[in-house]
Length: 307
Ligand code: ATP
Image (cartoon, rainbow, N blue to C red; front, side, top):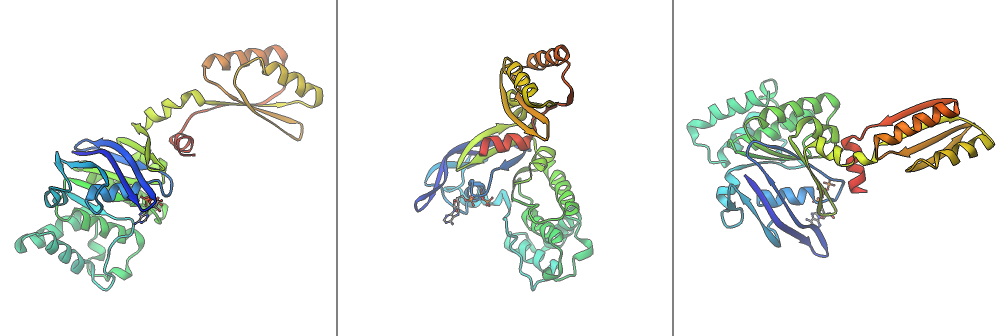
């Protein structure tokens, strides 16, 4: 449905995206992750046709989005990072305005507004001025304008930024609901959101794709960095002996000491390491305060890939 092929975009000296390629299948909800300045907004604007690539090509349903700009744009609904709302308008006036500029025929305008009001649950604010709305409702109105012309593709740039946890949950549910029928790309800083909402995740850093896959696959890829934290109550020479013995096990990473409590963090690439450690602890009868194996979350994958 969407193919990004070797796309580069420069702004003067800055190369915002560097020869990136990825594809999004029909019906897929893709999470687009990356730290500030990674190139998320630029990529989304290249897909919508707002920017043109310096190199490479974006295909929407097989058509080049530059040479077939009008057809491509008709297939895309876009919610920018800052929702373009005219504050002096009432919600229904704004939606009517959007419907008219999206070439919806006059007789279809009212029925379509009713549908998007239903989908985005805007009944209670339909007669209010846009400047009276909470951020959550403004975002819903933004989504309503993005889906007004019933596009197959939705591009949502950080749709939950600045919302409170309840509003985030509501918008997430709305994205899931819309995502059942449409192809969605949405960018986010909230990794749990990508994990909860997306079929697949693309991580971008410094204009380049650094990882791509289902959320659980990405976590699996970093499994070798699973950590084991061991806290021993040991002092002075006991610590030295303990450390010397533990050093025979591979991958000891960090050792810190606080008030007589020695904390050893081990990078465990194999489960065997944990078994060997357990045997050692039993043999030595050291007073163990804590032994924890940490799983790898998408949050850690993200930090590891974009640091
Ligand atoms: P954020 O999460 O902060 O929104 P982002 O991942 O969306 O960041 P972009 O907005 O795509 O990142 O920016 C990528 C790089 O391109 C940054 O270095 C940014 O300063 C630069 N950039 C983006 N738009 C322009 C522009 N119109 N003119 C000049 N530089 C730009």
